[in-house]
Amino acid sequence: MKFGVVIFPGSNCDRDLLHVIRNVMKKEAVELWHKDHNLQGCDFILLPGGFSYGDYLRSGAIARFSPIMQEVIEFADKGGFVFGICNGFQILTESHLLPGALLSNDNHQFICKNVNLRCETDESIISSKFTIGKTIRIPIAHGEGRFYCDDATLEQINKNNQVIFRYCDEEGNVSKSSNPNGALENIAGICNKGRNVYGMMPHPERASDPLLGNTDGRMIFDSILNTVLA
Image 1 (tube, rainbow, N blue to C red):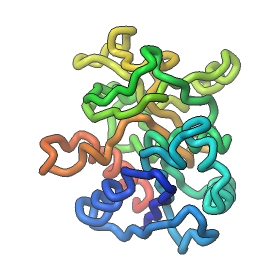
Image 2: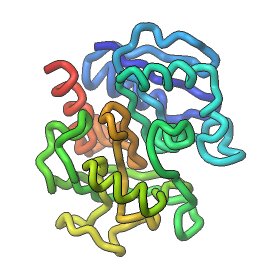
Image 3: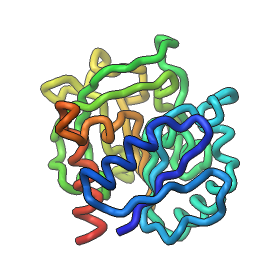
């Protein structure tokens, strides 16, 4: 199992992901530079968080046109596994690999704190070790994390069971007060209809090493290995 972590100018969570894959999960991981056209035979592609190209236009809008993304899009279209976290999620929506868009937080401020998430489906690679309703606590760090889509798209997302995580409180209740950024229906993570492309705003890689005092995020990486290597 070989993972590839795409690095754009402004990425700042690539090292976190590489550490988790290599040192915590004990799997092979390589760096994929944004100007390359070679995915190096990777089985699973990860798009990290950060501020690709400074996010000077819209978050992820410029990164979407990086040479490496041509390869990632082709890889995904053929059924390859792709997982975008935070800025990576934004890039996937800009690339139309995932539906919807990530808009400015409703308070128009950057938010960095721990949040609670409730698993909405166990029918995805990144949640295969979860039970539906399971809650975890991991960090968010974003200024444009408010998931939005039109009514027709939302209906399809719900109908196809594409919502993976929703923001909730400690008891697993989904409510306005537990929504940190105003995301539509408290949506924190989704997949595509083909269930091979995944995106979430919270950072599981920042809650996967015991040294950080929280390993809730490791369940997501365990889920990937549980499914792909099964």
